[in-house]
Length: 295
Ligand SMILES: [Zn+2]
Image 1 (cartoon, rainbow, N blue to C red):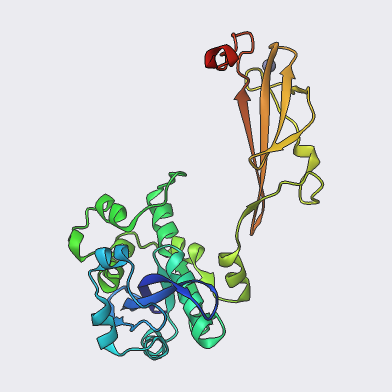
Image 2 (image 1 turned 180 degrees about the horizontal axis):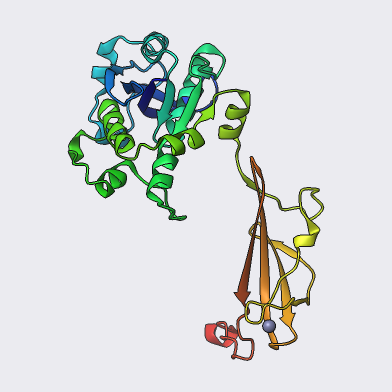
């Protein structure tokens, strides 16, 4: 199977027709590889905006593309898409992160009435692939393309970044360095209806205690000091999307607040439990400005 690494530049705009914000694709850039990862073709096309009347300042600052340049390309999205289809053939699609494939779906839906790009059989998220390959698991942030290239000692010019083809090429260099057949076969996903449901699924916190997806057997806490089960002292309360109650450990003679969040993701419910110290109430409470203060 061949591979196509796609990168898109897009401009956020408001569609009056659809009454919603829309990310309009303004540039396609792609690299096509054979099974041995040799580059067998590149694709680079600007798309003339049909919805946007101008480019957002951060888009023009980042890409250095001008609105005039786009208009003069006279390329419509449907035209570029059909060319891309021919270019890609039946390759596996790879993008750095999900945003490009989501934006591609959004544009296909807008122009063709359906979000599928059914000509592509498989997909791989190159960002999570590289994170796994590098064992980069910083929960606070995702691995950026330039950070990945730096980690792999791949040189690139800062100013050439954020153009579709150069980003696709840089993604290719990272992919080539981290290529691992086993990891790739584990990371690739079949593009079908289930796949679309999965990548468009919006995670949410379950805030109703009676929700059948909440497992009430999880509503307990063990003391973080002795590991014994703590006793709940108050009723559960919902605050900032977490269930909270006060607990007491009989053995350690300590009290704490237990917070549980139930996050619904596509694949199931993730439970997060946190123990929070209760502020020492024996401390004198700071006095508020009182009436005498105002006199
Ligand atoms: Zn304890």
